[in-house]
Structures are given as structure tokens and as C-alpha cells.
Image (cartoon, rainbow, N blue to C red; front, side, top):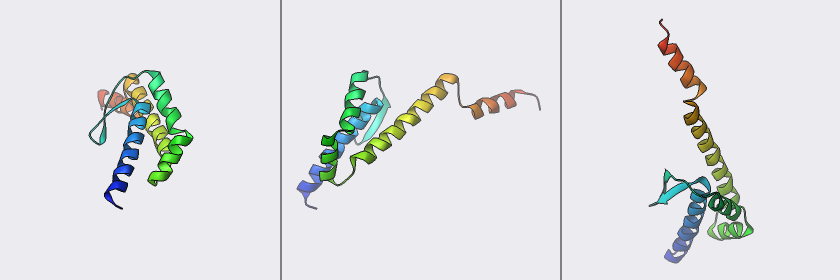
Length: 107
């Protein structure tokens, strides 16, 4: 690959990274996702629409990867975030609560 091809691929990957981060509600900085942030639902909806569009599929094909895989991974990450938020709101997982109760009881 020549430098121009590598630059084009990096640009396409950056577009997908930004779209996934918008979809998940994450800040993005310096080659990695950063802290969670609040975003308006319209940005997450637009990002999700883009990631499932034919334009994204065509762009990913030109860069040598599959947009479907990016969308599938974004969905997995969203599920993990949802479980973490639920666990945080309820005070931990079921196992963590059971461990805390067993530690409080005299042995």
C-alpha cells in the first residue's frame, strides 16, 4: 500500500469511529473513545442510521472492511453500556450484592 491508500483508509476508519462514538454517546479523542457524555437522541439516531446505510457499506467496502461488523460491534458495546448503567443504578450486580450481604453476616 502506498501512503495515499493508507491515508484514505485511516480517514474512512475515523469516520466510522466518530459515528460509533456518537451512537454510543462517547467522547472521542486521540485514537480512542474517551469518557461518556450526554448527547441528544437525534445524534445517536443519525449515527445509527448512517452506520446501517448503503453509503456506509460502500465506503467500508472501498476501505477493505465490512460495515455490518462495525454495526454489530456497536450494538454489543451498547448492550454492555446498558448493563453497566443498570448495575450502577441498582447498586451492583446480583453477585456483588450477595457477597456484600454474606460479609455483613457474622460467620
